[in-house]
Length: 179
Image 1: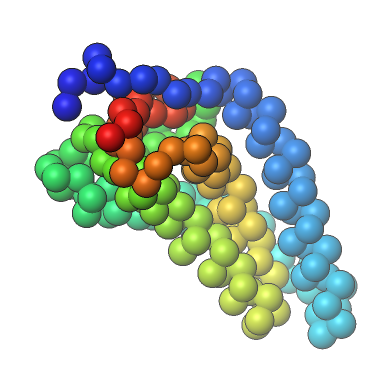
Image 2: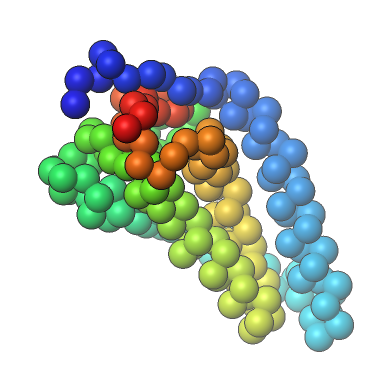
C-alpha cells in the first residue's frame, strides 16, 4: 500500500501528557479507594506494599506489554513478525512496538488493547479477589501505562472495522485509508 495516499491522524505528546495526568490520578484514586474500602481488607494492607517489588514488576511487565503488542501485530500483519520494530521514545520516556505494515482497524484495536487487558485489568481483578495490594498496585500502573493505547483506541472510534491503518513511523497515531 502506498502511504502517500493515506491520511494522518496523530496527537502531540504534550496533549497526551495533559490527558494522562487526570486519567492517572483518577485511576489511582478509584482503584485504591475501592481496594481499601472493602471491609475484608484492613488499612494495614497499605503497609504490605513493597515499592521495590512493584517497581521491578512494572519494568518487566512494561517489556512484556510491548511483546504482547508485537504478538498481535505479528499475527495480523501479512509479513508477520518481520514487520515489528521495538524502541524507546526518549522525549516521551515511552517504549514502543511499531508495526511497519498496514492492518485492518478491527485487528489494530485488538493489538493495542490486549496488553492492558492481560497485564492491567485481569491482574487487577485477581488482586481484588485475593486481597493482594502489590498486585493491585502493579496492575493499576499497568493500566496507567496503557494510556497511549487508550488514546489510540479513542482516535479510532469513528473508523469502520475494515479501514486500513498503519502505525505512524514517528508520531503518536497512525495513517489510514478507508476501504
